[in-house]
Amino acid sequence: MTLTFTLKDEEATVALGTALANTVQQELSQGIIVYLNGDLGAGKTTLTRGFVRGMGHKGNVKSPTYTLVEPYDLGDWQVYHFDLYRLNSEEEAYDMGIDEYFYSGNWCFIEWPEKTPNLIPIDHASIHMKITDKGERELRLAN
Image 1 (cartoon, one colour):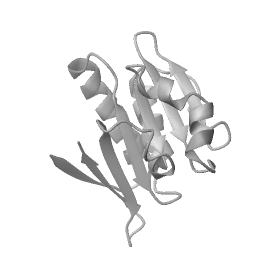
Image 2 (cartoon, rainbow, N blue to C red):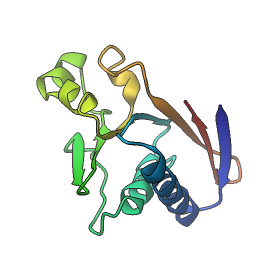
Image 3 (cartoon, one colour):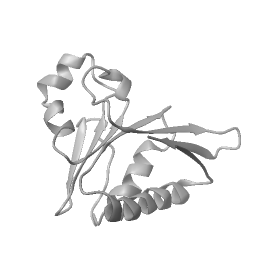
Image 4 (cartoon, one colour):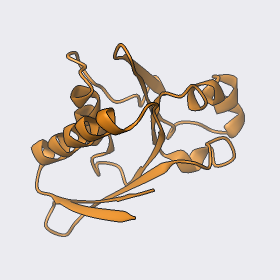
């Protein structure tokens, strides 16, 4: 199944992330791996921000560009937001214990998953984001 959304601005992207969180909290007993695909500036972190806030996080939700992973403890859930753009090899990811995050049963949002194709579990959802000619964001959600 594939769903496509057109998002006019940052607020709409955050709102969609929040709506996804509200839906999955009621439906799933454990987290899943979510690939976030898209060019720089496509809204991957913004969507994740909405999701984390929708799961109940009240604090800041920032990009993990420099830390590689930002963890969010949400009581019953953990959300791990990865930005693998700066990785030079899969060995670097393995050395940081990335596989432990992926198999923890918690939510993992992964920007630039193509940097570690052999380490990320096969079972995942994919979100593809792109900037349209009108400056909007097109988001395709597939599982």
